[in-house]
Image 1 (cartoon, helix red, strand yellow):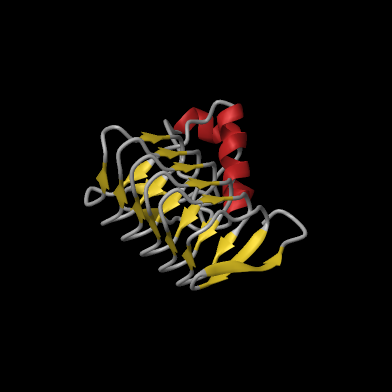
Image 2: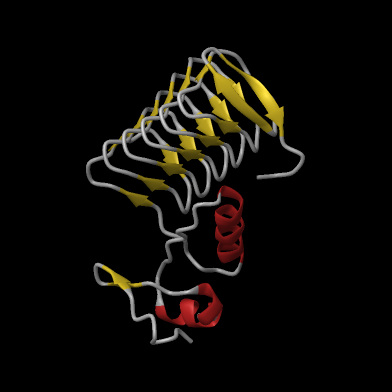
Amino acid sequence: MANEKHDMSVLEYPVLYEQETTENYILENFDEVIVAIGNNSLRLNKINHYLEIGIKVATIIHPKALVSRFAKIEAGCMISENAIIGPFVTLGKGCRIAPNGIVCHECNLDDGVNLSPKATMGGACNIGEKTWLCIGSTLSDHVNIGSNCVIAAGAVVLNDMPNNALIVGMPAFVKKYYQKTL
C-alpha cells in the first residue's frame, strides 16, 4: 500500500512510489498509470510489465502539441508542448517527444525512443528502440538509426547509422560503440 509519508500529487493525481505500492493496489484503485522514468530501457521494461499484467498505461499529449490525426501512437507515450507529430508517423510504446521536438511525415519510432527538446526528424526516418536523440539533433529525410543509440546534442545525421552507437558531429559519424543495451 502507498506510504503516506510522501503524500505527493501532481494536480489532483497522486504520485505513487514503486517500492511502496503493490500492483494489486494499482489494479484496484486506478484506471491508468503514467510511467515517468527517464531511462529508456527502464521505462520500456516497466510499461511492458504493466501491460502484461493488465495495468493500462496512459499516453499524455500536451494540448499545445500538433499531432496528425493520421499518426499512430502506442501506450505510454508522452508528447510535450509545441511538439509536432506529422501524418503517418508511428510512435512505439513509451516514446517521449520533448518540447519543440519534430517528427515529420512517415517516420517510425520503435519502442522507448526519446527525442529531447528541439530534436528534429525529416520525413520517412526510422529509429530503433531505446534510441535517444539529444537536444537540437537533426536527422535528414530517409535516415535509419539503429537501436540503443545516442545522437549527440547538435549532431546532423545525413546517413544511416548502426545499433549501439554514440553518434556525433556535423555531419554525424559514429564516435564509439556501446557494449551493452542502454
